[in-house]
Structure formats: C-alpha cells, structure tokens
Length: 116
Image (cartoon, rainbow, N blue to C red; front, side, top):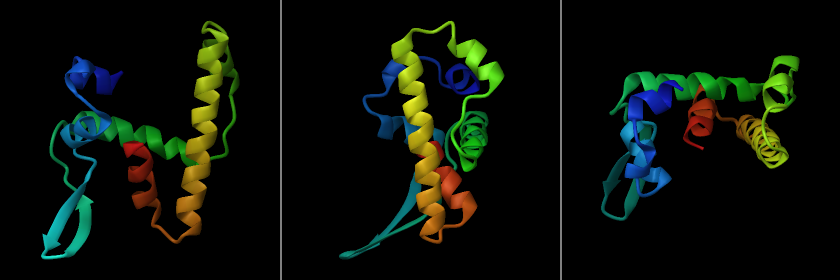
C-alpha cells in the first residue's frame, strides 16, 4: 500500500523498468568503451516506497507457505488470484535460494527480489 500511495497512478509507467528506475532499485551503470559494469542501487526516487519494497522482499528468505491470517485474506479472493499469488511466492522463494547458492550476499539477493 505504501508503494501505491507513494507512486500514485502506476499506468504512467510504460514498462516495469521505468517503475524500478523511479524507485531507485536499479543498478548504477558504469561503462568505458566495450566494458560494462554494474554498481550498487542508484537510490534515486521515492525512499519510502523503495524501503517498503525491500522490506517486503525480506519475507522471501523463508520457505513458501500460507499462514492462517493469509488464508483468511485469500479466501475472499477469486481462485485464479489465489493461484497467481501462490505461484509468485514459490517462484520468489526459489529465486532467493538460487541467489544464495551462487554466493550472493543476502542484501544483494533481497534487492534483486524487490526489483522482480
């Protein structure tokens, strides 16, 4: 809710990349000739929205499961939406485990998940 309140109308972004640029969770570029490197987050844009996204991404460190309060909230939604949310949770938890297995630092992994 914080992200939506901070950004307002999300349809003003043509693609997700523009949205992530406005939040400041894209890597800073560095290029010299044919060489291209990526640095840390740019941290431009709305700090509260970025903080909320990253805080939410920390939840994907744990195995995907549906808690009792979440079950009660999901019961009010259509079955198709429940399936999409479950599939996304499983995918993001798996992605976090993959990033950790490759040796990424936990903070890098969480910011990568926030971008996704």
